Image (spheres, rainbow, N blue to C red):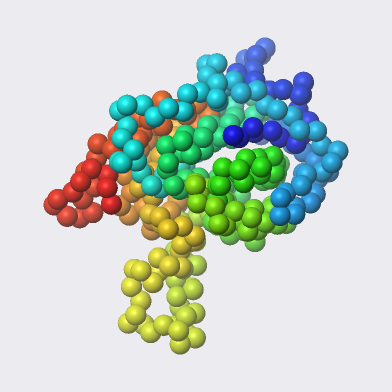
Length: 330
């Protein structure tokens, strides 16, 4: 399935988690400085994708390096994908959204550069994609980069964008084989040109896939999404395509960026790391979504935590403002 091979040279050609820590963690204020000083973890322009055809191509002189499949606690990413008996397929959410929070704290707690936290987070994402494929969840929306994340250091932002490119490039064969549809929501105009080209190409290449749709929210903000929808509706009124009295919720929803899926509303939102807020994510779309908050940092969020979230969802009564309901069925 997903190999998670990264076309970037890393120390010793192999990273396993947790790495051996020989020194105590430095104070948290030192970590961004630590990232800037460890240039081998942040690729130069020559190490980033230089071409992107329909099937993305990476620079020929970049070796593909397999990251170890071992994660925190020795759990393999190739763990058993069998659905536990406590879950029922007929009550499975169609659309799951995830705020993948805690990569930076995961690295800080281990005295590691922040970059290694982001890499570990991508390994956790790989695991969730496998589970969604096996358990017939139709849409997985992931909050990868918020409009508020530009406040982070330039070197960390550049690393995050290059990491997204390298993961998609290295996984394109699996994406095609598994019939995964890739969609991107957010303001792409501020993204690196190579990332914009890659997004355009992978969306075009996978547009007819239907086994699992992955919606990547990159440079996305819920407020911005609503504003751009309002602008689009206003322009249609100005152009005579709509009348003011025609505007209703359905009209607005068609202009939201999640109109790229037949399941626009997430049934379940999962946020990790113990934070109890939605942080400007899918503000309109979450009106009737069930929330699940987990204490684990995202790199440590695994099958058991996902099962706990799904089990909680399947026990809830979704009323949508009415008195009668059935468990978790829309």
